[in-house]
Length: 264
Image (cartoon, rainbow, N blue to C red; front, top):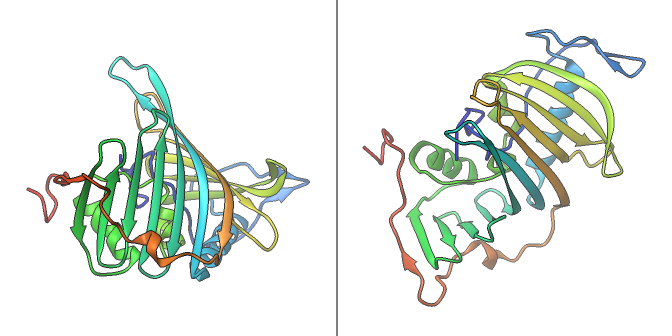
């Protein structure tokens, strides 16, 4: 997972949010000209609503397809895709299932006591102990381990707080349809990346689409995530968050980030 300091720095992590202020914006459906440092209060308010809505959910689940560009040494851009399922029970449990387009599958379990990444086709897993909540374990992973956690920013308790440090400008671009669903279209500039989100309107403000352009990276790679099947406060079986090694599975060492407290 690359890193851009939303919370994560790279295409693999999607995120959200902000806090802010003031106004001026859309006239006759046309967005005002975007200016560096301009913070559209309508855009930040919509993101605040998403953050509050998801943070209040005691349980949630969703599915997404994520598409990201990789810049090869030759400068050629190669695009890969993955399907992701996420299940959350606050404050201290989640399960993420990642299926790559090369048919590889990973599962990441957190039960409030330990986190495990299972490589299904290799029948290997990596595990370390962590006694705490979701926010704490995500921060710990980011700081110390080389572990891909697609869409992790969306399960923080304070989604808005994760993003606001890097925001330079924000704008509400109007209303758009995403797969037949009316959405707010928001545009943001942040350190190292421009990003856009499409948020469902009305009483269920969830993400429908998310796009990042990494403007300071050679080749300007892009990341796109498309969301579906949001479920808020579904009944989730506690057992799905606990890991039981499959028959014959082998535990292997997890790679640590150089310079981390747990690494060198």
